[in-house]
Image (cartoon, rainbow, N blue to C red):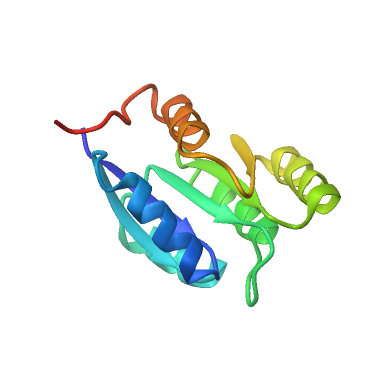
Length: 129
């Protein structure tokens, strides 16, 4: 099964890293540089999982999480933050309390990302052979 995955992050380099990691997996990737763009994509595409940064210009991640939970309750959310060692933990705790299903601090390794995506998709993220 193909998983539709939306990456919301203002850092194009981070989005490219995620695309490089996920290239061998059965995912259709969509990208947005802020929450407003991400919500526009959610209106148009049947997204299964959203990976969203928390600190972004325009509509930031916490506000986006609230809106996604309200409008698209079936969508799973992985919140990520690189807001410094202490700040990252604080933001991730807030994201979890607002409804994010999983959280992860930047930087992270590929195995941690895949493990969290597998939990969100019931083990459907496996490399294509």
